[in-house]
Amino acid sequence: MKLLAKSEVKSLLNGDYRSLIANLEAANSNRDSNVITVSKNVFIPITDICRNICVYCTFRRDPDSKDATILMKPDPIMKLLKTADNYNCREALFAFGEHADNEFIVMNELETLGFNGIVDYLYHICDETLKKTGLLPHSNPGILNKAELKQLREVNASMGLMLETTSQKLMNTVVHEKSPGKQPKLRIQAIENAGKLKIPFTTGLLIGIGETIEDRAESLLELRRLQNKYGHIQEIIIQNFKPKPGIPMENYREPTLVEMMKMVTVTKLMFPDVSVQVPPNLNNQHSQIFLIAGSDDWGGVSPVTQDYVNPEAPWPELNELKNLTEELGFKLKERLPVYPKYINEDYLDSRILQKIENMDKN
Picture: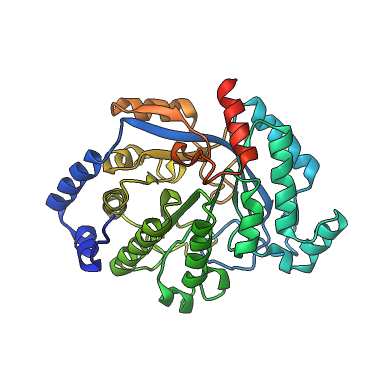
């Protein structure tokens, strides 16, 4: 798809109510169908130790925190997976703090279990998931190098990493000054490596952490460049910053509904070939508005576990999402963690393809 000029994207994001209405109509004209998708999943935070200290995050823990999860062991992980299987979940979302094994206490736990690092452990867990459950792994492990991504590709149906923003200036503010893994170039490189390896990928932007309209335009254009080159981005999440008690950014202003509508609409205009998602549990009162604005996926929703990144925001029930979807004339459909156009031998390991084929038969 042709890249817009940055000035054009900024103009779309800065438009008044007339341009917003016109863009809403244009974004909806890009829909292939009236289907809105959702993935029923289980969220497994393998460790909440992380090298980054992002001032909007409530997931990360210091290694000496009493409530830190240094490392989830295989038995409780498999117990959760079996429970999710009983609920007919099909996505196993694995997440952990970036480069957690840089911490001695985490590495010691891994070595005790016989693993050389957190990526080897994740590979093992994903492999066990494929062998012993009806779920497909989708991993969000932070920045990895190309060899690590290649290794995990064998046992994942898809993977993900939020770009968040291309704004370099945030690295010099309280937002990211203690978060080396939020360096935009590193995140772009990781997403690009996933493209080179043909990994079906979820990424997205975090709106309201100090970025400007120009930054938002640049971030969208960077994702479009990557998608034009590799075609592996299956889903873009437009996530709004939410102030939370106790975080350094608790008094920051969250983005307005109109700001978010513009972001969703412009994203869909620029990415007619990619699913657009806004987390429903962060937008209880406005989630339907984003369907009207152009989003076409509710993301992962779990009947088993909480959203450990936003524990204050419970998941909506699937029946509730069904009612919200159908009220607007859309149809709700459950999906796998990998989108249909990527279910082929170019993008998936033969073992995962076989598992999906067996799911279809059952």
